[in-house]
Amino acid sequence: MFFIDTVDVPGLGNRGYLAGGREVAVVVDPPRDIDRIIAMAARRGVRISHVVETHVHNDYVTGGLELARLTGAGYLVPAGARVAYERVPVGDGDAVDIGDGLALRALATPGHTPHHTAYVLEEAGRAVAVFTGGSLLIGTVGRPDLVEPRLTERLARAQHASVHRLAAELPDETAVLPTHGFGSFCSSGPAAGEATTIGEQRATNEAVTEDADTFVARLLSGLDDIPAYYAHMGPANAAGPAPVDLTPPAHADADEIAARLAAGEWVVDLRNRVAFAEGHVGGTFNFAADGQLATYLAWLLPWGKPVTLLAESPEQLAAAQRELVRVGIDRPAAAATGPLAGWLRDGERPRSFPRATFAELATRAGDRGTVVVDVRRESERAREHIAGALHIPVHQLRDRLAEIPPGTVWVHCAGGMRAAIAASLLDAAGRSAVAVDDGFDAAREAGLPVVSAMCGSRPERITADQARIRTGVDGDAVLLDVREPEEWAAGHAPGAVLAPLSGLTAGAPLPQGVQDRALVVICRTGNRSRQAVELLVGRGIDAVDVTGGMGAWAEAGLPMVARPGDNSAVAGDGGAVADGPGDGGRTA
Picture 1: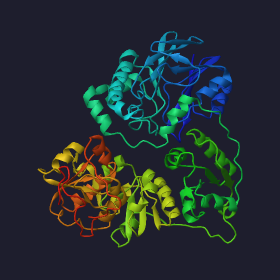
Picture 2: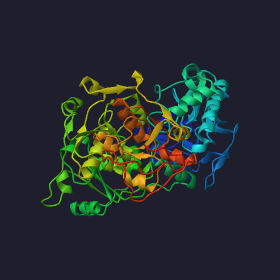
Picture 3: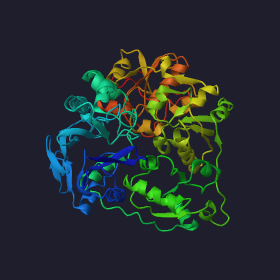
Picture 4: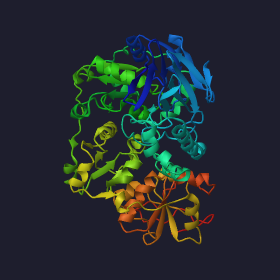
């Protein structure tokens, strides 16, 4: 008989596993806080003989190296992974005898990473389960775009082949046990359930049912934003993570909290969003402990910046520390627990901001001075959004505050958690904010103008090369740059017209001479241009945007010019274009 226990990491949407027999067990893809796993093994009365990694993880810091060191277990890592520590390199077909009639057999399954390896658990030579890591997930697959952009399509095709290999070589009844897919950004889509088998996935998973070209095209078109902290996870795992320290941080009193805020450090309030909105220390940010704390704090926190945690209780603080070490935020600079009053200096008053529903927003949306900001991801907004709302994903908000027009900012997401984070960022920056704490389904019910992708509302996107042709001397369109003036001055396409999105959103007219022209819209990455196009199309203007923005323009080797301090042709100022035709550029 064998057992398989799941090690849930719900904040990150991941799972690890403890699997074995009467006396011996293996651990697959362990999280960094390994005390839980050691306790699980003790309850089972088993010895951990092997610790196994399916790949070098991009979304969390592994506990595998430390667990192997503490238990004396063999540390199995795919042979193709470049790591800086001693391990047992595993290649395709390698088998490890666990004992109690159990064995692990390695299957090379590249795609999520080039070296990705799945492990088949066999009992008396019969496959009973397969630990698929970031390869075959429940109803989806792992992302192929986390390693190197130039490898993404190649890895997507490898992912398709790997899933087909698993489906072809394993019996229908084999349990599929992935690491990702339960909310993890390493997954290319949400899991379709909690448990599955090879037979079920063979019949339903599009990676199996679609041909390679169809699968790759669909997969690549649906890839979403990558959390910024992922860039640090792979290197940390390859270097060998240090042991964790979960002892309580140094205590911070009200004076120290104020001093850390004055020094520009991050002070994070872990209380729920209702309590924070009702009263908080000015300048603090709200990342609720009951939300996706690790994901969003690690995503937004400038890497390496000191962070102080404010918690309602020692228990809440300890749970937050545990979550944060999993993503490499090892030691808070300081912490405080207890009621809000203890975090305020004598005479200091708490700040607050209102919470609202979409029905309340509907009564104010048309008012002068009301600015609606959607902080969801691009993929969410693409499905449906409120017409005219400024779109700035929450992870970009602090860097794009200058784009938000003056007024009271009503910020919304899909359910309220990210809106609360965004409202705290806005409040700390001195903006008047209202957090819409409501499910997005209520927006349409409230009578707000919701634009749905099902209505064919998504305008065309074109490549940088196509944009160059359309806006050249023989083209039919004008290139409209919707970045801010300082970005424009640092470098822009010859002949482009500057019309910042912040001005367009606030109702500013287009510069003279372009109102009756077809427009090709460009920004830095393609996010703002997408929003600008939808706004312009809503005004009846013929507009498309450039996928990849100025980054794609530069990669295509197309010309750029820079004029420090050149702010001409800003939307609404009646100016002309900043440059003449230059190298094929078209003037208005």
